[in-house]
Amino acid sequence: MKNIFKALSVLSLLLLNTIHSSGQCPYDNTAYLQGTAPTVIGNFIEAAETWAGEFNRVTGMVAGNTYRISTCNTPTYDSQISIYPAGGGTLIASDDDGCGTSGGPSSIDFTPTVSGDYDVLLDYYQDAQNPCESNTIDMTMRVTLISTGGSQNPPDLTIPVVVHVVYNDPNTENISDAQIFSQIQVLNADYRRLNADFSIVPGAFSGIAADMKIEFCMASRTPSGSATNGITRTQTSVLEFTGDNAVKSSATGGKDPWNPQNYLNFWVCNLGGGLLGYAQFPADLATSPETDGVVIGYKYFGNTGPAVAPPYNLGRTATHEVGHWLNLRHIWGDASCGDDFVNDTPTQEDHNYQCPNFPHITCSNGPNGDMFMDYMDYVNDNCMAMFSEGQKVRVQATIAGARSGLSSSLGCQVVGIDEIGWLSGLSISPNPGKGEFRISGSFPAGEKLNVTVYNLMGQIVNETKVVDQAGLKIDLSNSSAGI
Ligand SMILES: [Zn+2]
Image 1 (cartoon, rainbow, N blue to C red):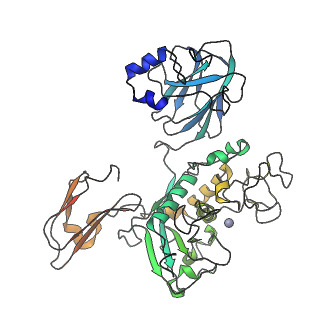
Image 2 (cartoon, protein in one colour):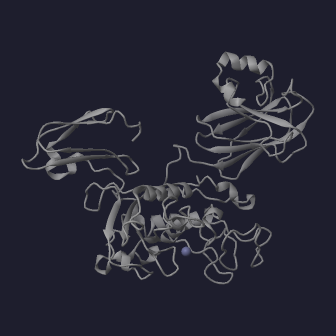
Image 3 (cartoon, rainbow, N blue to C red):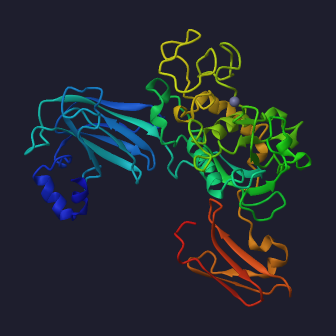
């Protein structure tokens, strides 16, 4: 039914409202309370005893944030929730039985596309003819911030990533660009707390789940200043690597790292020894720069690819290992009831495997038990979904300390045409622009020019080869905007 409504004009919507269409309450309610939208994940504001036929105004909602607006805590009545711009206007969103009980309370996850104030109307679903009734009900309406991530919330740091694919069998181990890109997307979601499965975090811990404010880019510039898509590929005679760092050196069948002060080096290879992956802690960067970085088995990198299969198929091996690379310890402290040097992660007896039931109490850490859904435990990929605020403190100290070279790295910056040696005589116009570009100028006789256009994910969107000095036109008019 809602899809049909969407297709109707505004005039028709108004008409539908006058006959109290299901799921949408008209903007005819009276104001009750005003509150400021929460700014910390897990925090909420409440309007207790909101009567049917009243609305609460929520001020300062941020575009891109997601707020859960719910009456699930007071399930006595069959409520409906409708969201309007402050003061009225076109209905933005609504819910009837979102708590999961037919004829019960309501819950809706609302992500405003425009920052500002919104009116949340509460009504009582009375009957089919008059679904939005002002009536003598009182329910508690709660507005909880469950995730952030709008453009107004930039990262503290974007880390340039180079992925060294070291393969023996070209059919299985030389993983695709798409598999590599999928891993970068997983990292960007997990380190911004934008992972779609965040809802598996129990309420006892969701309030301290951190937006680490770190993002990752595929390097667009090599340490020497050349353009790159951030991927190197090396065939090796080594059938299987272990945790001995051989993959990190060309002398031992691997690939040398890029300057680890400025790049996160990943090596993806056939990794044996029962390892999914391993990482070097930042304290060793000064003394052992040649082995700094993260090694991941090719079956566990990214969340797509022919060899990627449960239970380690969602890219969380890299999320975990990058945590180590940023100085996070295992959450059990690598000892029985050990210390991970983080204040808000409960002491727990040992690692957890698979997918424990909440709460899993050890080391007298009741009632909430182990934070086993933290990325620094050993559970299955689909059972881990958070870092804590305390872990973020530790990571922030690392990026300001041992890994401070990342913040001055040029690795994420696109190489300008005037930086490319003999190409400096060339120009691009219009720049910026869209559609058709022209490259003009002259280049040495005998030189051949290959022009490759990448998008921000490092994927090729256009390739053109030129063999003479005539002006070159590149047509990007069929490419989507924003690349
Ligand atoms: Zn680990």
